[in-house]
Length: 280
Image (cartoon, rainbow, N blue to C red):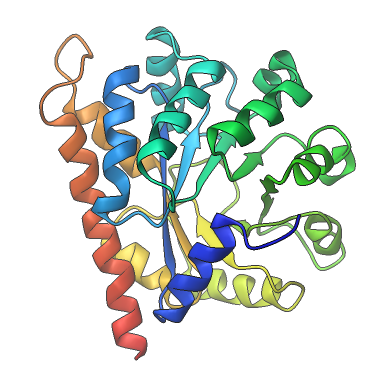
């Protein structure tokens, strides 16, 4: 990859402000294409620095119940990978600077066709990929082709990724490193912020890439606590829960759905920025 990517540029801009980046996760097509698109378009103004857009899949093994349900709602509404790329393309036509990372599993990409997917994703304006079920040993499947296509491939490190394993995980990682704050699936709670900070510091001894922390960040206070030691704070389950709680009795979007998500994003952004002010 040559030149500064949107992801690199955004992390550099946040660092110049002396703060962590807020990375927000929402599921494409949840609860329907139109509402999900409206949420996506509203995220930057609400305070999101980077957007992770979940690709719905029937067997999301790394996700807890809130994200599982979001994926089910999206699939029931007819969301596909092709529609997800269309969402990104429409977003990119209106918003040039905010990076978008597709997060999901390899199966939909494999079925779509790797070469075709990477071509279409790049053309749509996708900046990075997080594919949780492709380990470094399978880099030839998608990681290396993605890098060749100019798309960042973001790898996850976990509390069980020791110093022996970490160099392998980081070998072809680009954009940023996603540190999973706990063992288990999304939607849990962080038990020890100090341990997370120590883990981030350990990872940064092995790489110059920014390190973003996700899993278990639910509130502005959580975001502020993580922002003190990380380059990015990732929030997902709480945001998709806001979608669920805003739906009517038939599971349809209401006039409150978009604002339910953006109001929490604004709170989280304030939390991240409060950590920067405290550090200053």
